[in-house]
Image (tube, rainbow, N blue to C red; front, side):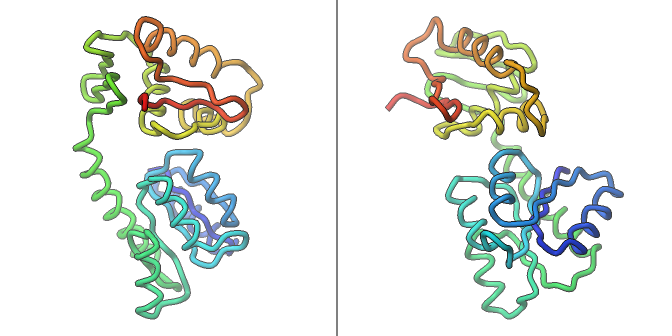
Length: 226
């Protein structure tokens, strides 16, 4: 799994990163709420571990912001606040589970596995993505527009899948670099422009109306016409 830990307690964060990495998981860390929100929006993770009390932006507000953006990634809330009312607030904010500190790593791991199993079951149903007359069959690795097959290279397919999963929203270049190329730095190349141009030629050139739009100064947006 790829897991984002948003935790300002360095000792707890390092302990979780080390323990999860030893089990073969990829771990990203954020030490404050604003950075955590940016990373959660910019990259695709299998699960988030969010401390409730964070500098910059508290954990519950962060979770509410993610849910408002329709981010469905399973979220485990960590907190020293363990009263019933505290746990209820955490779940009502959009958390999927709530674990009180101090905790046993084995319990945290078991809860993460349970959350991702449930999420996986839901995702398994969604094997087709659609934006207007553009359709992607994730099982057959096939794309059609208005019933016409579109041949895509593997990277183009991944790029389109990312855009379709964020349909209707602006996708920044940073989001594309991290979500499609797994780059966590700017390679200072025109790799995105080249692939967007190729993709646009394949899904929009011979069809109307265009679906893939450039949002000047922000990024790109794949959206159905209004």
